[in-house]
Image 1 (cartoon, rainbow, N blue to C red):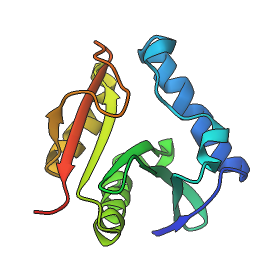
Image 2: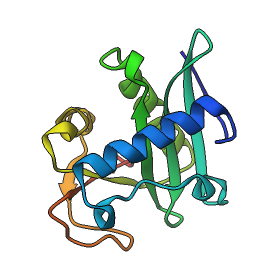
Image 3: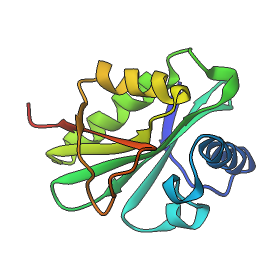
Image 4: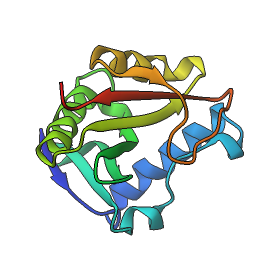
Length: 153
């Protein structure tokens, strides 16, 4: 698998991100969906990554800088044809290494509470993320749960 810094101009990437957004809307009301729109990926505080297997888009994720010590994992999504094949774990491993190498002390994320999000929740727990409260402008919401992980241990 090749993981690289990318942009959202590729048609396959746009399609995956659109699917991600539509999936979020199936399980949460619009005010509880925190998926980024395409223009947000072009902001200077967000670095967008894609994972490719044999020239096919396997997944994506982004790192959003919150401050000089805290970074957020955003828009982590695996393509349907690569589900349950370890793509998310490899992508997460790669992004955690980047965050550590860039000397961030903490990484946090928001995910959904519906049953469809249980595989993602389990992945984060497997990587030693722990539940936390809302951060960086998020609010308590029955459709959201928040995880964080120290990068200094």
